[in-house]
Image (cartoon, rainbow, N blue to C red; front, side, top):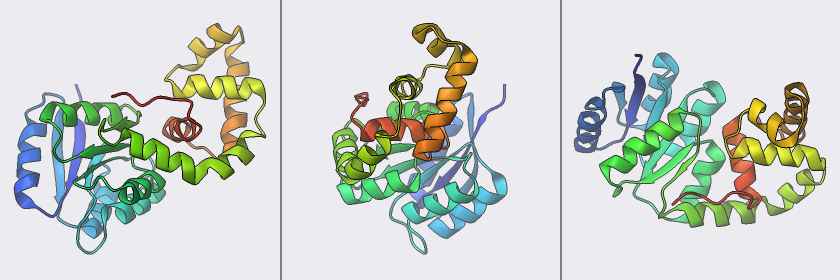
Length: 218
């Protein structure tokens, strides 16, 4: 069984060591690289292409949000889990815009971190329960006008398919629920992704969150 390959980016060596011990104790995970600043995190991630980068927010040379933005632009397949001590909505919204797939406070339990890694690695979105309301509410405010304009271009069927995709249903399941062919579902999916400039299921989940269509798990 192949292991999930992780890169740790944090300017505190003690924290990195603790995270490495925890992650390497999991039978299906391994830390393959470490970085002590955002610039190194971005450069190393481009070279070793980990499955998930655990990214601190406040680091020297380049902060976590900027490193995430650059990394997602050049290596969109690499997932980023932001690990932060900041609960401020400004930090959180920057990470959302940068493309991070997970947002976890450093005070979270070890089991919560492992859970977050698995969700993000599988292509999902993970919100720390303590951050969920701030992420959703702030993001919804920022995206409301844009979202309303874009949403107006969707057909009713495209919206139905989008909502189901965001909730984790695959094409075959959506086809069965809506009594459509798989090819028709794929066509609706392609249409709404093009109209809304979405490029992945994670993007679709973020859009659904911005419209208030999903309730974050907590």
